[in-house]
Length: 513
Image 1 (cartoon, rainbow, N blue to C red):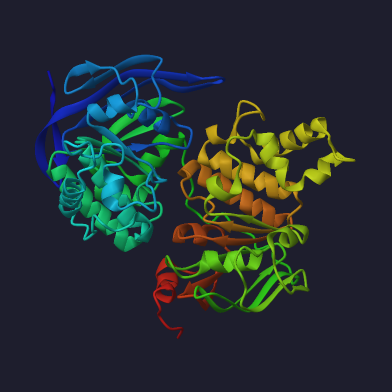
Image 2 (cartoon, rainbow, N blue to C red; image 1 turned 60 degrees about the horizontal axis):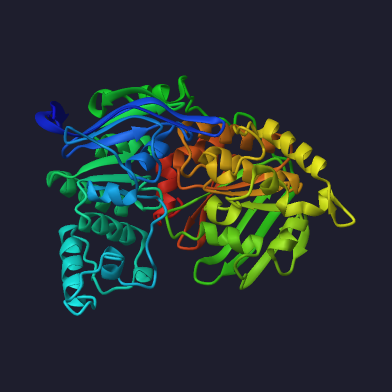
């Protein structure tokens, strides 16, 4: 029999049914105890936030609920009845759907085709009933107030619209429990508002949502309760209306995490390590000029679409530079290319580390050395002992948490994956490092560690360019800040003393006074 609980929502007491309950879930992988007696419950029409550091067990628990993993022991109850989730098909039949941070859509199929992929309605002849498929897809898209046509190719949609297609797909499977994994990670502020309105509509219609996010500031806006996991264990469940952000952080990491400025000493010298003069690239970058000194941390701030990543790609040689000049350690680089950048000591840690920064199925040691294999080879023969020695050096230096260097990178937490990317570039002896969104998808404890690593690199004489959409992050670590708007560098600010309001003023097109 389902339990009823009193849930406080906007100051109003609401009695809600228990939809889902997991009790004492355990899961072990080789060398890792991922979950230890984890318990959790979900109410009808509730947004229940699942919070924890990378590696805390959130993803493992969600994969058990969605049928990708089976638990070693423990019980799952749905509407008061004990169930066994054998696979993803079983989860779908039980009304459980998951929307991952990386969407599972086919770009060149229409929204309707994606929504019903593998489940297309059929005519008596055995052919696909395209009219019904389109009508049913449009009905679900209209329910989400999306203004998306069922006939549009998914490739033509923005990230937020693709997310709505994913939600429509889940609703087409009669999902009553929707798991959202970092749903706002790639969204602009206006797109986040649309998502939150969609969530409100869903919960009003009885859909229950498990919401995973590292953005603490948004949790109180969208969530009802929060359950915190740490080291594979349930720490506790609290009403979001009665818990502070500091308390959530303490539950997550088991300690206080400072929000004070990490960069307390400016170690910049007069030597210019990287200089860009009047660089233009396509429509994204227009006459951009920046400097990064040796031992300095410089931040690039701006709104989505400002041209920050495109500027970094043009500097590194991924995108074509239409005009302008790039100087690395005083030497003009006439045509930048990634191999040339590497040789000159310039490393890029990309925004999408999983797609461009790592070989996920390879072990740690092969990822660390893959950009400079010549350093551990003699006459074309790899020195495996040297490769392992070097890797262990960076595991120790960067505090990469792993059972061994043979661990596949895909099984590491986001924070540890980022450290592996950093280890790779340090091994190439890159002393000018571009970090593009270095803490995206990384928990608050690991963020603090990444900030201190960046600060330590600058103190060792490395030159750092950080691209970040997280304004508090910029203010914590930057010596200087460039603000971009519509492809142009519109302001230069000191890191210490700058404010979020000031940065947003220029990022939104405000003029300098």
